[in-house]
Length: 277
Image (cartoon, rainbow, N blue to C red; front, side, top):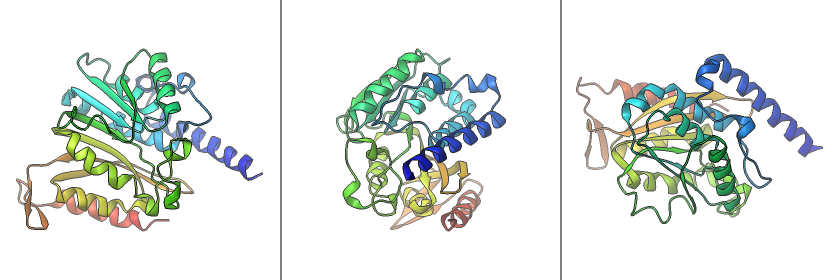
């Protein structure tokens, strides 16, 4: 009975999210992303849901900026069904020079991602690996756009790190175990102009994550935020900011206009969101 109710709930969430999506983005723009009917599946692979749609909505919201950004290398960590990396490739399809990578620890997910990409006529280099193992030297400082829908659900630590479907959501204490491993790897892989789009749950304490990234010289912006009955999702974009300099253990914003108002606004948003149930 519980499984049946959960399945019904997930279907309702997906329908509501799609309704919201087509309200915000007209059919012409919707055609630029992966079509659900062409997304492959497997019992051990996480299917596109509200978090997947939020991440793609963030990419769509930034579409013009992404095209102007002209990324040479794009990458998704944890590709799952392939819905997000396929959508990114379609959003940037008019650019013939971008090259795509996608990784997943789940071998079934890598196969399903390949099938989804193939069904949409786009391509990415796929690897079955933990986060970016095997690519850290090859892609160091080269990734212009990275997208990540990490395992963010708070779970017992023993559930983290499997290679089945649970790897898609099991995030350990506060949902941060895998997130905290991904962030330094992303810092190593991102180019000087690199952008990181990453999805967080309010329980992950995105405010603390933004402050942590600020200490490494990154600015941040909430691109999409979405609340459901069960969770509050935030897609945050990070990029290296030359106006953020380090002074000892304190990151001080020295914006050209002399004011860190952008950071104050972001942090005030996250402070409220972090306490939302």
